Length: 120
Picture 1 (spheres, rainbow, N blue to C red):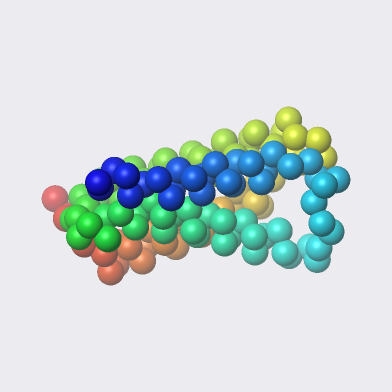
Picture 2 (tube, rainbow, N blue to C red; picture 1 turned 30 degrees about the vertical axis):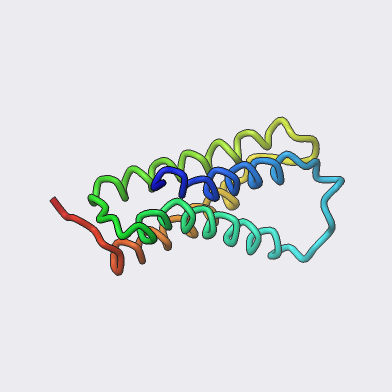
């Protein structure tokens, strides 16, 4: 059952990928800062969903596992940005990637500080 708890994470990752596949012309126009807020929220939720099963099932996480999640989520954010190169009207953005990473590492930081981490 523990592994089934990652299903929301997998679904949310798919939703993010789908949303980033939408051509720019199909997106609603918004103030310049709105996409950054959306990116932050998307990846904040993604990181929470990645770590939530450990919390729900009261599993202790080794510190290396937390670091591996950080690497995996950073890689996912990078591939999401790279894949936008092939979407009409979209492009790779270091700023978007940076916002994604800030959201991810903020969640990881708080999990490290308040979650159940085994340091050895």
